[in-house]
Image (cartoon, rainbow, N blue to C red; front, side, top):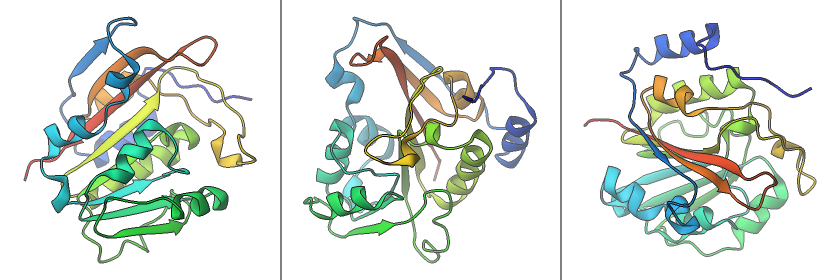
Length: 221
């Protein structure tokens, strides 16, 4: 049975907003299908530099990093972070990313569940947290709880990328963590204070094509 997500605020969302201090609603940009290229929708470096500045001074936590084979994942790996911490729960993905080169001055790779990396991060100053195609793989309650804790940990901000709407997916690559366990809409992140850029029918390889969105929250210094 697939999970359902409505747009009305439920108790779990209310609790999350309470813990986040009732943030002001974020801004929304909606890009219609045909008005952008795949490269524009997937672009990572300039999108993040424009919001957070010099990445070479940052410690970046990439939760659910995967094997490092998507367009976005390859960008994350090649950038000159001060420190890049890659975490994934699936052993074969961890082994694959260990074999890839990185532009970071220091690259730490860990085989851990993404829901609770905080004991490992004790004493680590994390500037930026990335959750690229991660939230949809978690139960909604766990995803929102994780966001609350990550916002307290990150000094500069949080960057999300996720399909929107009811995108169904089971296990892939023998990886049970690939199953989609929750569905998300732009309004879910807007209510939590994230600026959202929606790219209609971005995932053109799916039938039917599915929409995706970036959601970014930058913290003032």
